[in-house]
Length: 105
Image 1 (spheres, one colour):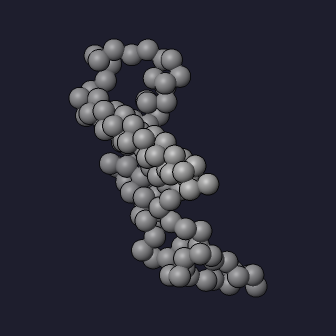
Image 2: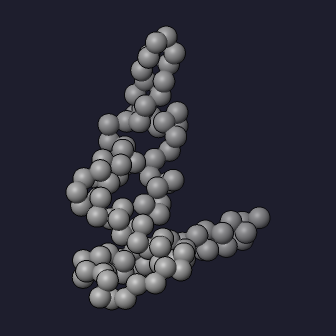
């Protein structure tokens, strides 16, 4: 979810994109193998809903809400750990990408 913007190029740039003609105007739709579409479908599933709830819990914690370990079940705690690990990796990648761009200029 942190890399959502890089999962799929804009449909106009995707060679596998589908085209539809709703009511006389062409519309570009994502391809059938689009990872962004797959992510959205997954997030609507029961497990995906659990991830979305943990992301909301993470937001609350970052906004200053206070909870104790007794307020969180073990699955949510582990998912929060995974989210934190992934966020750190993502931030590190962003910093390295920025350094590489600056080094090229």
